[in-house]
Length: 551
Image: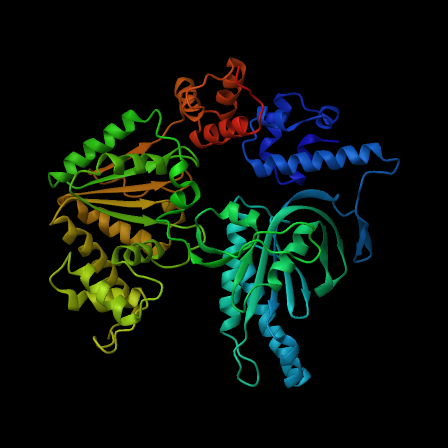
């Protein structure tokens, strides 16, 4: 068995080099433990669990007199091909159901009901595809979908929840032949499964999945109210604070020996950014970035004097870009300034000005139950801080925020292209207007996920900020093609990996000052290769798996 091929089959080909460097062959593979995987530098708990499950399946196959578990071959176009081996992995499963479909079928003609089901299935499938999930099976008024198979991402649970919310919204926009609005309900669960063979043809074609997770998703769906999404406790752990949730208490579900603790998804979370939502207050203080903090503070001092500055902060995932910005904001807490925070999202790269809309809604203090008039009042109050011409700007930004203004402002009489130009100008003027009152710190994070219109806004802002007391900080990953470097007031800053000494200092903070055995410390520092997020995750894994004891 080729180790590289085996890892690629699990979707974990990135670890092939580590396995080969440590002489892991097919014989050694059978005996790997969780501690060995930690030593190999596999910091992701999900990836370790997936590997351990696959290794367990290999052991079971080697101890059986039969051949290893394989799928039945399927025949296509007259030729036979072997299906991939069954494998164990963590999967997020979503089950969607059309509410009151039985009563609907009794009222409608069969052809009308068929059309309703087609529209419903199309709406649900579109929501799932948008977040790169996989529709495994249509079951009349039910839709079963997988997130994490056959294609895997780092954020499967988040994708599933977003797809669930999008699905119930899409179904709500549909109506039956007799005019009734349709409703769906969704159950989502995350857990270990064994993914098997492809069976059936056409619409019935599906991957067999064995385990409690699909059953749990189906049970959670039955307890969801129409138009809502209910998730399992494990899914809830993985999404952190990305969504606002309501705990439903311990529930006894048919077929499950112990009570489960489900949660209902209310909507987007209140956390300011993905970084805050996923890491919160439990993040280790910044280590080894004194030079970078010093440079940012120097640019801030120049900006305060009216010499507007732009810093392009680049670095690979986990290197500490968001930590650095949070540390800078902590240093400026006691200084009078205005902070403007914009966060790009991997799930909204086609939503024009998504990070700006999020900032405006937070800055204006919109509440979920605010009526349109109240939101417009709050928007006008926010704009009054930056301009004396609120009436000229409010209709543009109200349109951006999808607020009704008919009773207060006439409709915008301009072409879409001109409206976009005026909106971008108004947004730049808002930043410059705020800077006339006190210095502005404008943050634009994860611009590698920015939509094209947001990049146009940044083009304008970078061009015009140089004469204002403002510091614009733009963060992105190395794959983003740098812009704006032709300006004299723009400074690129690349975050490097931590040195061994800095990595060891970070480990010491995580272990509350207790000295780890030198061999363990050396392994952590070597395997994490100076990436702060990896240092943190691997150290916590070692501390939480009872590999060490106090003496």
